[in-house]
Image (cartoon, rainbow, N blue to C red; front, top):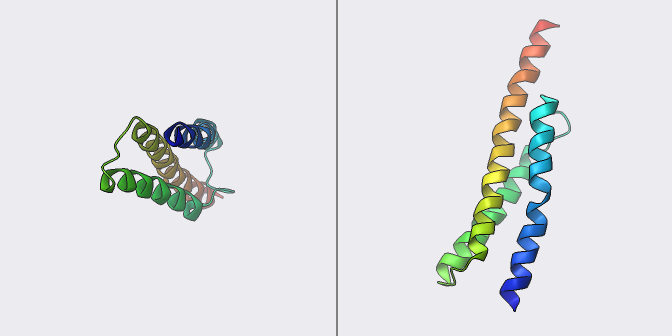
Length: 93
């Protein structure tokens, strides 16, 4: 039963990432985005994955940790892309 609640927790956290990724893609700016926050969230998902591996309790929930980590990683990549775009725009002005 606890794994079901853990799965729902990770899924509910993960629901917001596609929206964040789309917003980052369309906005083309890093303004208003915290890279430190994204790194903390990514580290949290890595810790969740490591916890499952260490306890040898590898279940379907690990898939959701991995998916969320990949989505946060995509948002991190977009942050740096957008930061570069911000620098290019500043040079043009």
